[in-house]
Image (spheres, rainbow, N blue to C red):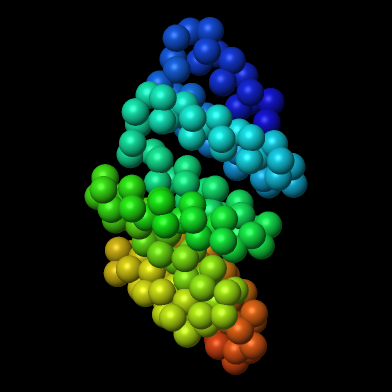
Amino acid sequence: LTTINKAIEHAKTHNLEYDLPKFYLHKSYVEARMGDRDASLNSLSVAYDEAKEKEFTYLLPTFLNNFGDHYMYEEDWEKARSHLLEALELAEEVEDVWMAQTIHFNLGFVDVHQGNTEAGLQEMIDAIQYYRDEDVKTEVEAMLGELAEAYEFAGQYQKQAETLKEQME
């Protein structure tokens, strides 16, 4: 956290504001991993505002997806869905196919938690398949863990076990 704070201050004092949205996003990730969800949300808001002000439209889907992820963690499914739908619209507008798939995955997770289980699981599986086809193993591995969590929530324990086994391979 100290390092990213120094990077932010350095960017501000040396007129390198171009990097501020990404720096604040990174700060948000660090704060979330440290368990400080409020600080993380605040840093994410600053990142979003900086990107919007600088008209870095290509970054907005990522930030909105992260807002969605934050609200998913808080189990505020409607706020999550709202941010994710906005993120998806912008991702499609800027033709960010990879981010669109991540957003579809997250929307599927929200669906599962809101009782639209089969459609939600299918949306998650489709997004994972996209990353498999693109041979992005790190993304697939992380998504498999969340898919296993969704299977657990849905009471599909055999599929959960199979998914966890696949994740470890």
